[in-house]
Length: 350
Image 1 (cartoon, helix red, strand yellow):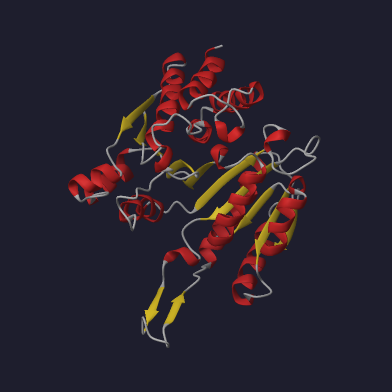
Image 2 (cartoon, rainbow, N blue to C red):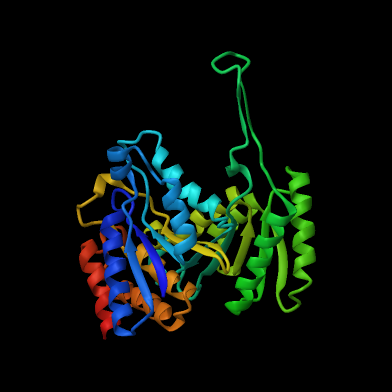
């Protein structure tokens, strides 16, 4: 029995999670999947009520007893420093060593891209981001705060182990998805020590994949190329910070954050799936939140658990719904969150 922890999150998180769970429950019952969905009370409401975001006992249970986590967006203005978000999201990411952040960015319809002339230019990008090192490890600090001599230092941590495993993961994703090009993105001209590590490991690991074209690109040039000719790229592998930025660019050119799903993985051990659109508390409960990113996360979850046919079914249903025009306002439609979720479900039910 595969156990999945359902954490709806804050703001629009529960709104869109309800649609993803409704779809998962239908597929589970229809196909008799050995799957248990367990709802967890974690988020701003619990934090404000009890003063606890994620207890040690809860983390230990998630680590030991669950195969994966389906996580809604976190963030609430009632918690100004978003302490609960860091305690939940970052603790799970670092504590479970979810070093692989995979964000597929596929353009389901040319008209959804803000770029002109996308007809006949299919975009299928897989951004593979290192998820537990780099600038986000929060090594550093401030000195002489509030004075003219104030100093702020933030270290960019890169280990050979961390770099090698994320680069190998990128090549493995390319192999599994029949992609024949992997591009490593860095800033080696301005960060030569880190660049040398990434480039040498990329070259060494790349030799194990003779059928895949390998190239490198500076991050500023890649940011421009993702706007100019995104269809030229297939799999991008890069550091934590650069991956965060480039995956958002990739999401925008393929329809926006309302479609962007992500997987946080420690292959063979743990997994967490989350949309990347944020909690948007200002539209909570209004019915305009786009549930498709969360539904796509459900598809990634099914794929991770080995239910590949059902995962493909979810993705094709999302594409069909977009083509039908049954979308929320961010994609130019007039449908509500629930109506979009129902439209996807209707295609799955046949």
